[in-house]
Structure formats: C-alpha cells, structure tokens
Image 1 (cartoon, rainbow, N blue to C red):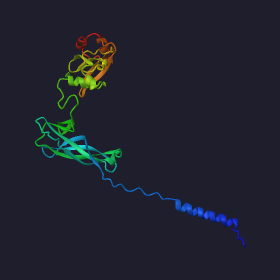
Image 2 (image 1 turned 45 degrees about the vertical axis):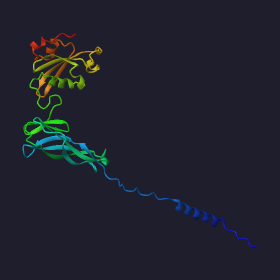
Image 3 (image 1 turned 60 degrees about the vertical axis):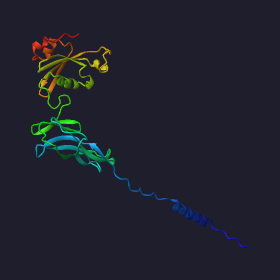
Image 4 (image 1 turned 90 degrees about the vertical axis):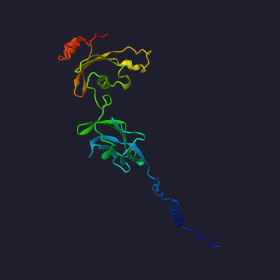
Length: 263
C-alpha cells in the first residue's frame, strides 16, 4: 500500500483557514437599541409667577410665568386652573397658574422662558388681592407687586407695629416661630427702634412655659427707619446711651434716656 504524506505547510494553512471561519461565524453583531414606544408622561406643576400686568378690561390681567426650557418636553400648556370650591371675595381672587412637563424633562431643562397667561375674574379686580398658587399680589399703580410675607398687601402705617419689627428681626436669621420670643422692644418712635435680642430664647419650644432657656448674651440693636423698612445701624457692646450716641449722634437724647440699663 502506498502512503500519502501531507506537507506540514499545508496543514498549517488548513488550521488557519478553519480558525478564521470559526471566528467569523462565532461573532455576533450587537443589536441596535429599539426605539422607546412608551407614551410620554406629562405632569402638571405650579408655575412660577414673575409678574402681573393689567389686562384689556377691569376684570382681566396678564400673568407672566417662568417655565423650564432648553430641552424636549420641558413645558407646555401654561394656563389658569381654578381651585375647586374657591370663590371670589370682596378682598381677594384665588386661583392657580400651572403648566405641564414631561417626565423625560426632569433635569434636562437648563434654561427658562417667559410665557403670558391671560386671566379674567368674575368681576372687576380693583384693589382686591390676586392670590396665585397661594402667593398674594396687590395693585400698585399701573402694575402688581407681591404682598410682603410679614406686612401683607397693606403695610401698617405705624412703623413700630409688630409686623415691621418681626420683619427686621427675621433679617437676623431668626426662625419665624421664635420672632416674638427672642426680641424685646425697648424704644420706638417710628424713626428709631432699639431692641434687645436673646437668641437662646429660641431653644425652648413655642408655648412651653416651663422651659428655661440657657443663659446667653443679649444683643442690643439700633435701627433707623428706611423707606423700605427698618435698617440695622449697629450692635452695641454695652448698650448705653453714651455708646449709641457716640456712634449715632443724630439718635435722640430723649429716647436714649428711656433705655433700661443692661442686666
């Protein structure tokens, strides 16, 4: 019997070819991601009111709102949405201003855009407050302005009223619930205000008469009236009449003499 021999070079070539074929047919091409068929979900949010202008008749206004923008699905359909069961009163008109945003837009709206939303009340608005998304606005001449958190829509004429004092103390980073407890008004004549501030009183829960706040420094603060409210002038170390008048020569001597000594 005659034996046949295969050259080693041919064996090597055959192995390489078979390996290439195996590699070629074992590879898989990743499938392209399927396009999402889920319906776009739109959610209603309260709109941020940026301003209000009078409308074409006494019962209407144009509400300017800031809407998220800069991406698909950021906002649509800004509109007035009546509050169920709410009725207009002689003092106020209550309603909500809303818009819709897609859930795909969360975190994808880097800018804002203005939109105008017309609104017509049941009757002439006049001097009534417009309460939009629980925030009150009032007429100020040819336009509208936000009502102050402490002063309301009609600030008290008396500059020594609690609302003006609370607003001044709030600017000292005192929690709202402790505004009355931490301050003691010493003198006030409408142009000048002096009070003692004890921040440690706020350590006791509101209404807890048995709680004794820890001892702490009492700060005596002098305010001067500014067209926008009370403006802090200084915080004194000793709180004496001499120290106050040395820093503020225009501070009345008659008020200075009414200040109690520091304890």
